[in-house]
Length: 306
Image 1: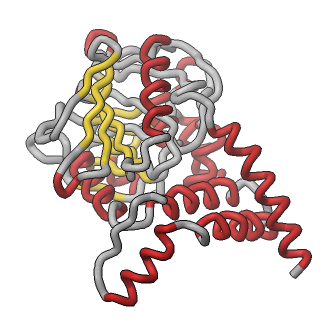
Image 2 (image 1 turned 90 degrees about the vertical axis):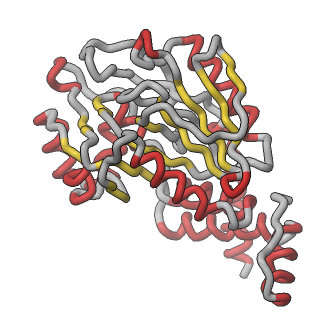
């Protein structure tokens, strides 16, 4: 028991230090490549885990919209049955959604605000310019919806998401070796962890581009869907997944994500200590009491993120 408590204390200290690192601003270290221009659009610093991105056509049916950054970033808080889901849309058509310094700064400010909002349950990043990718760092579940082309930095950002969904017609690949460079935003690290070392080497060495079906078969994405006439099938599937997350306890969701992410970076024994420390954080919450009461009363729980 003493060893377990000591392990938990060490793990909790580890988590607290990692939380500081998790505050690194969004979409850093990304060498963003547009779908039509192979040139590097800039190298930033500090890409953190938990990024979300999307490749979809313009959305519709949202309840509210706030435009910031000269309309380059559109923030939509969904309503009704989608309440708790936030959609951030990048709209830099003139630059094919290249992540410039101003946009990165704007995204970072919005992300920091969302981190403090207990009403936010899941965030979907999408592009309002068809075929371009975008991303941001958040502690809540993140989903990459790939409806178009995600090459180079675009795929690297998707790899930093919790879940990836793509249309059958989507195109994905780390093509940097064609430019005599290598993936520089986590691709050489996250791709092997996702699909295995040997296959990751093959894709990077060959700069091969795969479609949604092949991406699903090799484990690069979790879900593949037939593209629809609107060109937003992956986004619609991502939205459906986000709805599945909404009923769960928000504190538990955030802590579970933290436990998984940090546990994957250490050995099993340390990972179990991290899990124990994270579990302990859910015990004193009002949501846990509400969950037990709702179960006893056979009714849906009413979680408040407290």
